[in-house]
Image (cartoon, rainbow over all chains, first blue to last red; front, side):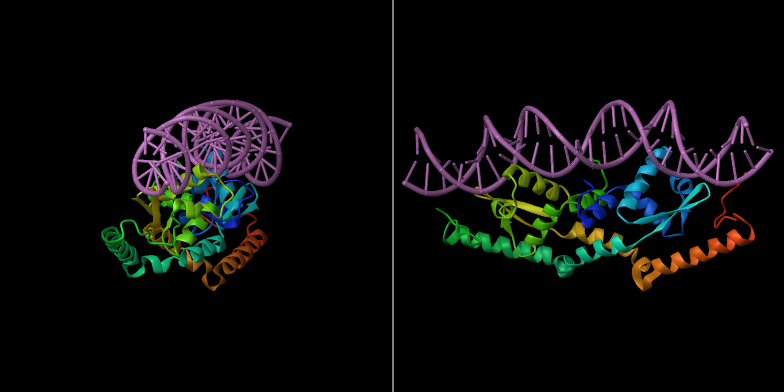
Length: 127
Length: 127
DNA sequence: CTATCGATTAACCAAGTGGTTAATTGAAGG
DNA sequence: CCTTCAATTAACCACTTGGTTAATCGATAG
């Protein structure tokens, strides 16, 4: 993921790591310091720091300095946007549409094979 | 993303690319060949092929061979799962909870600063 | 048979990712 | 002061990613 990517790509890329998703899940139970967030993981502090930087870069968390601690908390707006994007695909999984489309397609193709031998299912130009 | 990653990571990683998201969007309007899918993009055929392989690896599309064409169509199940995962965070963006938490926290911290000078907002051990 | 066409594979490259250890910064405590 | 502690930065590493061009494969059309 380059830092020139669009916000949605940055969000999805940030979510594409189980450690980072676990950190986000932990933050739903309340704010935490970097040390507290890293404690469950068998991972060095710099590694956690990098994960947090990715999450911050995606706008998924906010950090605030408190003395020598960095308090992290959730910023769910990007998840909302990602959720919205996925929402557009809902009709494809509701009502087993996947399997319906598969069935229709299979039927259509078999029939085309029998009749015209290769009549395409779409206006695909055959020279 | 390694191929040993969990399904959710693979799905999010696959979605973290605008070309791949555009391909998925195109497929909501019906199946298409690889050539048709790649036509809108200023990109070589192998590049499209790789994108499709990523999408297929994530279970987001299925390919079927028809003569010399590969017909691609949407498989929305992984999106459904991703959607479900994001759903758990809904309460953090509904009702402007983000800003509410921010306000409460700021107030709490300011007060702590005035009274005990550093009393932590969590059971953070101070040696 | 041969040329062509859709698509993939192979080989390569620049840049990014996820991790490490070592060094650094900044605030608190003795 | 000087040390300790939370956290980050620096430098490095192996591996992945997203793209390229060239070569290959399988099916179709002449």
